[in-house]
Each structure stands twice: as structure tokens, then as C-alpha cells.
Image (cartoon, one colour):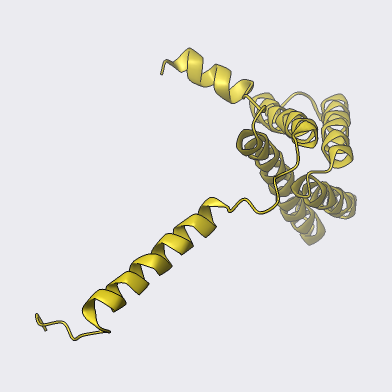
Length: 165
């Protein structure tokens, strides 16, 4: 896979199947959660007096908002995904207007993650519901493991000690 193919897949992933739509949603969830934690750290630093003391309270509010957005995105809420994208863009516009354009590359990556979350939540909502009674992969492996143990017990007449110990 070339670098261009990899970049195209990462920038605009296919969200037409459930697993890939969920991956896009997870990307936005982790971006929102990381941003919330980062804002909480900055708020704590602000309250210690190293930064503007007023910045601590507002940063905590932003951290709570993004924490709620992360929870909503995790629940596959389209409203939360769109709100996260819109609030993030508005926050970055305000930040640039008051402080200048610093960290634009990181902002772009976080913006891209929020955009993928919007795409993922809308795509996931369009997917047909999961069929009832179809076992998951985890259930299949559990059944295989139980069948193997049951077969070994039947063939060996129960558990026997290891002759090599």
C-alpha cells in the first residue's frame, strides 16, 4: 500500500460497513475525550496561578462539554457528533481570533477526527439493523472452545495428569 493510498483511507475512510463506521465513531470519541482531558489539565494549571486564573474555570466548562460530547459520540448520537464538530470549529475560530494560529496541524487532525465521527454516526444510522439470533464472532469462538474441551474430556475419559511433570 502506497503512502497516498494510506492517506486517502485515513482521511476519507469507507464507512459503508458497520465495522468501519464504528471505527470512524471511535476516532471521534477518542478525539473528544482526549480534548476534554487536555482542557481539564489546562484548567488545573490555570487554577494554580501559572496561567490566567479565569482560564481555569472556562477550561473546566469546555472539558465538561467535550466529555459530554464524547459520551454522546460513543452512543452513536448524530447530534453529539455534529455538535462536537461545530463547537470545535467555533472554539478554534475564537482561539485564532484571540491568540493567533498556533498548533494548526494538531487542530486539523482533531477536526478530521470530528468530521469522521459525523460521517460514521450518519452512516451507522443508515445501516440495516443487526439480525436477531446471528452469533457474534466472540460467541463462535466460545462455542468452538467449549466443543473442544467437551470432545477432549469424552475422548480421554476425563482430566488426566500430565505425564511430563
